[in-house]
Image 1 (cartoon, rainbow, N blue to C red):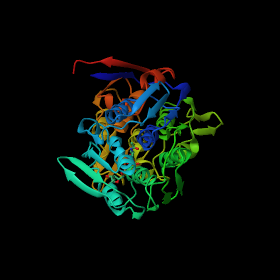
Image 2 (image 1 turned 90 degrees about the vertical axis):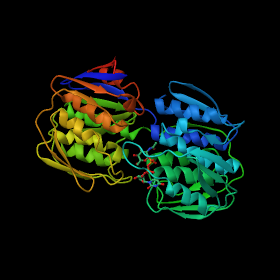
Image 3 (image 1 turned 90 degrees about the horizontal axis):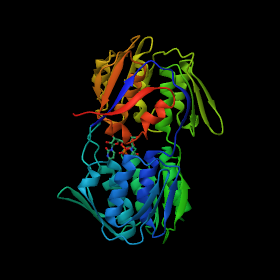
Length: 420
Ligand code: UD1
């Protein structure tokens, strides 16, 4: 098992590059199933989640080549419509092959992902959408079996779901007729999937709004696409600059995609400057101030930044509250942060109360999920003494070569091997 060994107390200074969003790359890889021509995604990081998605797609017959920052996928000989538990259980985004498989080939058998550390994460919205489009959907032996043919339909989501939006769009692009999705997700990653699909010849309107209209076309072709920048990485590094009173340039970073976080940082006297190349975050005069946050769908405060922001508020001068509205169990980082000296209480109704403290101290802590793990790394960067963050495989799902990139900013961080 690998861990990060971090000695806190250094102000981060210099340049860190952020590439294409993991949460955009994964659905785009599934979208490659919709054509027999090659789809090339550039500006990516070859993260462990990208590797898992590749393995799953290869098991279906997709041919894949990649280097460190691009990947090419070609689905000209799909031999298998069954996505195994082995892959889907590791990563929920694997489930998103369901829409393209049933949309292009009229059938799919995809393992149900099940819950995970942050919540139950049901799939009812995916099923209801496919059923409105004419699919027969059955659950057998842990697999969802979906059979077409599909037809265009009006689909209304009972709540906003990023994954169900991806999946329904991908099911609809090759489906005859017009499919209209109401209450769709507006996340930049959904917009970018639509950009890719339109480049491939799809007819999709309404990207970035709650109403998306897909007019089915007969065939899609290949495309090359540079993936939208990772706003969650950007936000995480901006928080690191504020916490460590550093001054960093996030190459590729976009302030317009992290407005709710930018607003809080500015309230803490952090200077943000956007250039055409990226985002400067100057936290040298930062004064951490308390606030109240409610997570919500884009353009609201992203749930994926809730745990990193908890770390910042743990050191603010006063009491903060965070209400988590997207997931029912996303405070696993709290007991670990409290082991480092924070004073955070989990209240009923998915809310935490954070009494700011003036210092944290190093400890051995364990990450339980991707973003919660990052919250611990951020805490370790400012804690007095040494912190060991265990189970970093969670963190490495979404932060590429984190130790190398933070070390380049002056952080004292190493990836170490532990016996247990
Ligand atoms: C995606 C992101 C994840 C982010 C989340 C919310 C990826 C790979 N993952 O996950 O990082 O935290 O969006 O921004 O892009 N729900 C249902 N029924 C469904 C589908 C969802 O009840 O059929 C619920 C979920 O349990 C959750 C909420 O809806 O409580 C939002 O989930 P959703 O937007 O679907 O998240 P993901 O697409 O899985």
